[in-house]
Image (tube, rainbow, N blue to C red):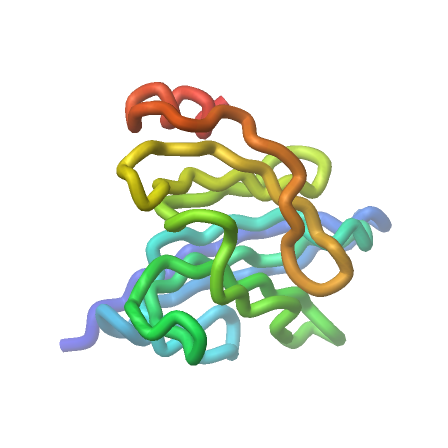
Length: 154
């Protein structure tokens, strides 16, 4: 019997229109964002106006390998709606460090929790740069996980 998980996000555009993103899970590695098939495990789903156009986008964290980074790792996919249909805005392969988690914050900022190759933690912020997320600043760096989580969740 297939497992079905359904997460709904109702959002409102700048003009006051309601929009809907839904993420459903069929099994461990098959999800659908509205009608868009995501064939990878999902670890995070968030909504916010990443590209600054006044409408919300869907941020989906997936676990997958890429052509340039063949080891499976956490990635961020960003989608928007075009004429009511889900379309990819950015299907990121990597941020600065080893991505542990992310979340959308006010003002178009995507905040990340990352580890470094020496086992330290950083919290960084990224902003849309026309195509993809560009580094803005470190909130905290060279710290332990407990301290990094405090900054990540602020």
